[in-house]
Length: 162
Image 1 (tube, helix red, strand yellow):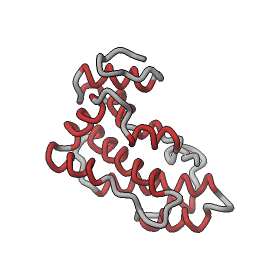
Image 2 (cartoon, rainbow, N blue to C red):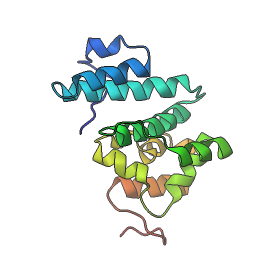
Image 3 (cartoon, one colour):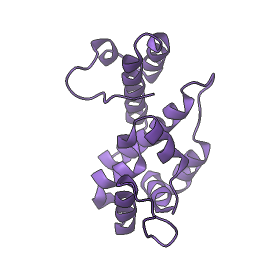
Image 4 (tube, one colour):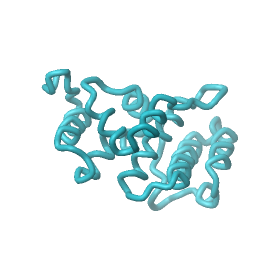
């Protein structure tokens, strides 16, 4: 499955008119078999709408929320029910969105979310991509780990690429 970028030229006008994530997801279900690219575009739009409704105050927060919703969307495709990133949401409630992202990125191994987004073709929505777009909002260690992971070198527990 490949997700396409929603923003930019060539946006499907059917999708651009949707104002709720639910309408985007229903559209994706309806067209998945005959228009897989439109379905992917609709799922990406749903992710953006969910994050926008969450109340983020900065671009880094909004994009971090998009990453969580993108992970849920990627894991939900092909299931009969919606996947919920329960442990991630719990960490966000306890620590806040940016500290939660910092915690996930600081882990020595790739997170399940990172792997799911790579497989879904949505690497631009991964926490690591958010950290690299907004390095001022995160620690130097988080930025360095994100650079290594996104470059294909997966940091191990010593912080060295393997």
